[in-house]
Length: 117
Image 1: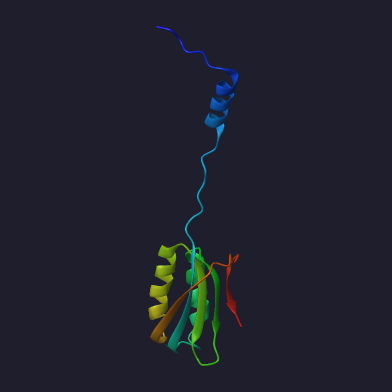
Image 2: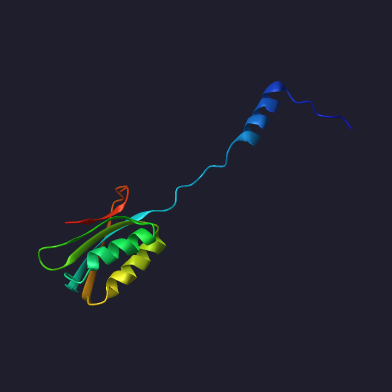
């Protein structure tokens, strides 16, 4: 049986391919904005929301609005965002959430989660 000879370019190409690092895919990231209505100011909603988001590895911010509601913008993996939204629908002790209005936003690439004043 005859052995196939390889030319130099085939050998170099084979070495190059075998040394390549596997490509890493970026995790799927979304950004959502929620307006939480009800009795949500003065009950520690922003601080609790910030702690929850940081524990879940989310990035974004939370702030009070002048009409008495709270605005949350968060980005990260969809599963973590769903967990944060579920928490926002209940809120901390003392909060009475009546409605959560969702809106998907373009990803901005925030570096951390913060409370805005």
